[in-house]
Amino acid sequence: MDITDLHQLILKELECPVCLEYMKPPITLCQNGHNICFSCKPNLYRCPTCRQQFLQVRSISLECLARNITYPCTNRKAGCPENLPMHLISEHQVMCYFGDYECPFSKISNVYCAWSCPLVDLKRHVLRDHRGSSLDIYGGGSFYSHLSPLTQTAKMHKALVVFGELFYAVWKVLEGDFCFTVIYVGPESNSSKFSFKFTITAMNKIETISTCLITRGYNENVDEVLKPGNCIAIHYDTIEKFFAGENKLPFQLEISRLGTSDNDSCHINQNDYNVDNATHY
Ligand SMILES: [Zn+2]
Ligand SMILES: [Zn+2]
Ligand SMILES: [Zn+2]
Ligand SMILES: [Zn+2]
Image (tube, rainbow, N blue to C red; front, side, top):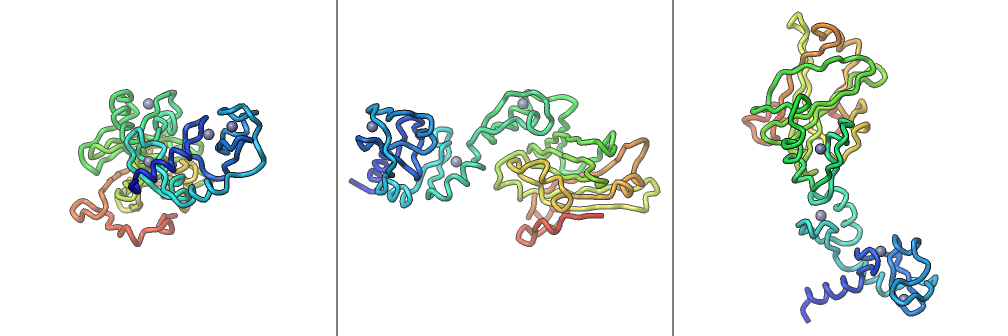
């Protein structure tokens, strides 16, 4: 028997008879020695295999094996090739590219959409099913738009497709600060590969505020990323000077791929970047 067969054999032993997922400690036993996972056990009165009662003891040797092998990702059937030790696989699964993700229109825009699919397919769904006024498509990385109505209670978002990638511009006014950031709707590992430059210019064309940040990931909590310190934050009193018309803020947004010097207008060194670079005016 080679090492792959042995690995498969151990995984087979670790398969929970109820949820069919691989068990992780604590693993408990029934009177006849069958194993059950800790998520399923509270919902069961007797062992699903032999109908005997559960014991209060744990399967120490199986737990020991579980701690020393690698687990395949729960999204393996969807194509995820990841195989990691127990303590890393849960972390991976939270941000797995092949997992099921809620449509950003329901997650961010509060538009009813029951669609969920792997991250890799979300863009296709949005382009197919949400084409319309709330989705702007740009060929290049730089464009002009406006935020309106920008009031003290406004909490808004705009879906953007730039270089064929899906982004969400999100902003709100929080305790007197205008907060703005851009979320990348794609694999977590890619969100740090894009930067955005947000520029506003006053009507007198003299005063300009321009800030660059790295785009945020789709797994992050939107309310958290929109807190001063994590995003672009400008005092509402300051931002009012940049209004063109009632509560209308014209802005220029440029999204760039990091590290490609031609179109990286921000010149953010990925390794140097940390959240302290978030700006507060
Ligand atoms: Zn189970
Ligand atoms: Zn049993
Ligand atoms: Zn995975
Ligand atoms: Zn949708």
